[in-house]
Image (cartoon, rainbow, N blue to C red; front, side):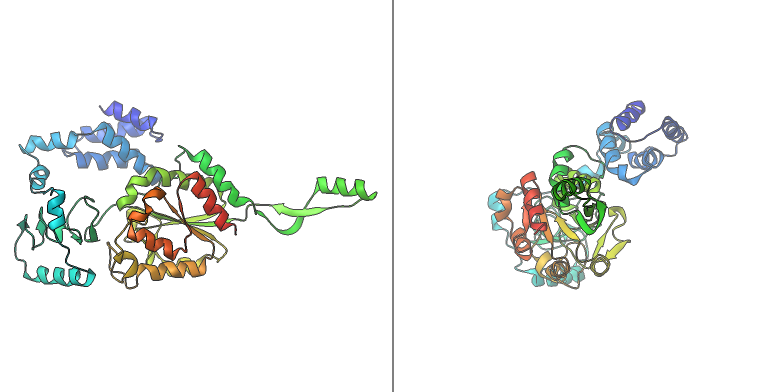
Length: 391
């Protein structure tokens, strides 16, 4: 099993050496990982991964090779895993039942009611319609259903209805070495370099000199602007939540952009731009870059590309405190407008097929903020976006 794990990592392109593999086996033999799959995961990751850019590939291979091992291992200590028992309380309502569940009626009322229930609740609740708990129709809790509420203590999206998420979630950096499908994206991005000729006439134009000399009958030395890539690009990637379904397309775009532009920088955000963005998803809470610093650091001639599905609660765009992950003092639309006021050449690439755009109110709001400069993350969409950036 371990040998297969080693070969699968090599096949996935991770630079894993035999020495590192033997070090992992020695640590396992010494009992460092114990009997828990979680401990073995961290031990093998520490032993075999030297660059955090490979963490995503490692996770995929680990999940493929050791799929199902966790539930078997836990079964040694308990007849039924605890997670199975906990999720027995999860209710899957029919469409008719869901239609009968009414939202509290607005952001202010939701937050006011949550504060009140936190003060009053004294014990755990399951399956109810009022208290903070699991498996019910209350607007607060996990593994239930309510058309508008606050998700607390749940491992991911189920109904995509929460207006706020009070849990720490882990996002992964995009892999900058993805090559699947990047060739055609590179060809589209190269159109952005059409105006790379800039600056003073510094380079001898040999063809022009020969042509001018032959035409005029005397030596006519011609110069031309030096060819160099002066295009400067800022990329902002939405990560986490519904964007997990679009990792492949965004990684391909990221990989192609890194190889095409000499002057390129990137940042991550979640759903909407607020007062801070980040460079490392694993440390996004501790190492944020103030958005004001981005605005004041990069010259206004940078071309800005936002990449995201713009699928969120409208509160996240329109209201202070609307972010699902933290309390933002100013609305997302305020920060978006500041970015657009600074960087006049900006577009938004959306991985969601364009035929579904009308179904998402927040997408329409973001499209309006972008003044219509939102394009699908397709080859035609990239070409249209580049044409806009070149205007």
